[in-house]
Structures are given as C-alpha cells and as structure tokens.
Image (cartoon, rainbow, N blue to C red; front, side, top):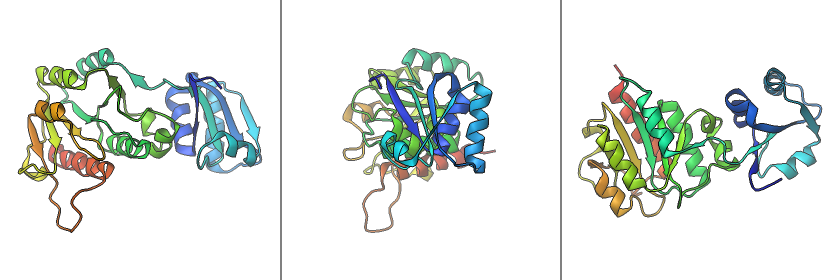
Length: 249
C-alpha cells in the first residue's frame, strides 16, 4: 500500500463510501463466510458499482484494520473527500437563497474528536466543515470509522489560512460565532439564525487568538457542575443543535 492509499473499515464507513464514492474504492474485502443483512447490503452496493469483492479470514482483516472492522474494509485514495478553499466558495454560491450553516474546527488534532464532530455535523444538517491544513487531524480511517459514514456525506474543506478564510465568509454575509469558556453571553442567548458559522477551538487551548478576534460573537455553554468544560466533540454537538433548535420553523 502506498502513502496515497488508506484502508477504511467498519460497516457504516464502508457502506457510505460505497454509496457516495464507489469509483474511488480500489479494493473491497469482506469477512469470509459472513452473510447477514448488513454485509449483504455491502455486497449489493459493490455489485451495483461493478466492484470485485475479496473474501478474507478474520485474522487477515485484523491485520488490515487498526480497530474493529466489523467484517468490512475498503482500500481507497487517502486524499479523497477533502476539498479546497476554492471549492468551498463555489459550493457556497450553489446554496442559492439557503442560509449557510457551517462548522469551523480550529485545530482539532484528535481523530476521535474529529470523527465525532463530523457525525454531529451530519445529524445537524451542516453544509460544510472547514479545517486548517496544518495543526488538524487528517481525514483518515480512524476519523471515518468514528464518524460512522458522516465523513462521506458532510463536505470537508481544508484551507491554508483559516483566518483569511473566515474573513471571506464574513464578506459573504456569514456571521461567525465562536465558543469560548470565558464568554459572558450564553449559547441560548445568542441569535444563531441566518447565515452562520460555528467556530470551535482545539481540545486543550480552545480558539487561537487570531481566530477568536475574527469571530463576530463569542458565547459559552453554561456549566452547572464541578467540571469546568466539555469535551470538544460534545460541546460541538450541543452548540450545533442549539442552532438547529433556533433555525427550525
């Protein structure tokens, strides 16, 4: 396997890969002898896409996958699914009159957190997830596994200069709301309707200074217990669904 290729594993991740990007699948390997409904659905998707299925014993699959493969693994282009800043601007134009709903992740380095954020973004109906090219977890097999297929359905854009990208969003009438523990305005008090980008900071340090300064508003999640903060993926889910609540008719 070359550096330009990677394995994706897990029923949900492989299934969405076959549904959304079957032409980019180089090899599909399923557990030999398994014939339940979930695996048979993968077989049907592979047959529809004209892919040849390889059968492997569990020990062989265990060597391919760095985790619980659930009897399914697919080899694909390692860079698939990540879009450019140029594509972001084009895709925003294609939204038409719809108010953009964007998630910005400023330096999420843990692939499990990244995957969980993508899963929440998919559930909340986010149009785009923006990450910096540097100081961010890559969109790898672990992220895709944790995302349970959301990495194939939510557009992810990697940008060279995040602050410059945020300025471009503001020029297009998109309000930037950043989450910061010290903010005096609570999440529920902030208007989250209209064109919106939710900006989340890294696991340890939160928002970087320039990212914080680029935001139009800073908000916090009220904490009633003794713990001072939430895991970033949990905080992302809470914030996105408060926005969903406000934006629902």
